[in-house]
Amino acid sequence: MTTMTQTQFLLELEQVVEENLNRHLKVAKEWFPHEYVPWTDGRNYDGPLNGDPWSHDDSQMSDVARSALIVNLLTEDNLPSYHHEIASLFGREAAWGEWVHRWTAEEGRHGIAIRDYLLTTRAVDPIELERLRMDHMSTGYESAHSQDLLRSLAYVSFQELATRVSHRNTGKVTDDPVADQLLGRVAADENLHMIFYRNLLQGALELDPDQAMRAITDVVTTFAMPGTDIAGFQRKAVQMAVAGVYDLRQHRDDVVAPVLRFWNVFEIEGLSAEGEQARNELAEFMEKLEKQALRFEDKRDMLKARMDAS
Image 1 (cartoon, one colour):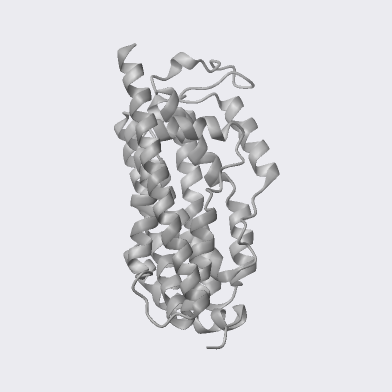
Image 2 (spheres, rainbow, N blue to C red):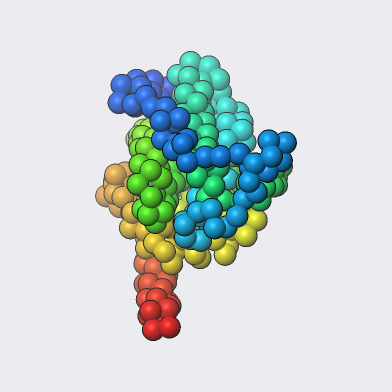
């Protein structure tokens, strides 16, 4: 079997893109960020408007919920970098280009809505948040797969689902019905984006299963969320994992495994030796990930037991 080039994939998948774009436009629901923000809870901050300075006591939100919201928001903030990557890779013409702009427009709502909620409810220090935003966006973002179409499609298939899980669970730990409703709306967008990319990679598997299998394996075994370079990310990630916002068990069982099942990666027939090698590596990694998830659960349960005892 002849290995397809990136240009060939772009041409061959054009019809798949168009079909899934039409599907997306049919099922995506219009929504408005301003409707999910409790504006009457807000008041002026100190500064030119001579309002009240922010205080930790302004909000009853837990530290872990605050950390999760900040991580989620800052991750959304790097949208210009994400747009640049997919526009450069997919192009800006025909169905590919139409998707690039539609996806960017939909993603733009997420940062708007979450920031408006946080500032209106005074849930976070606005000065610290702005400094974090400036620092994070000044660094920019470039994924490890920015030059490779199949690896990029595989990556966003998992990443969009991971983002959905993180937003949904963040809403739950806020203990605020307004935040929960807002983040549920954001998560619904992320789920539709995941479906679009997942279906494109499915099309690539049908065109060149060996090359697509290698791409999937490389992405799964090196996966990292785009917010890992946020200042203090590791500490926040541990908080989020212990609280059940996003942890290794969820990553394996709720993100990686369902997408792999959809693609039927362990049932595909007719792979070459290279394709089988990639699949074997993937199977071994999934076993390793299961062991890591079990160890995490044990440590988390021990930590919670100590906290309950104290």
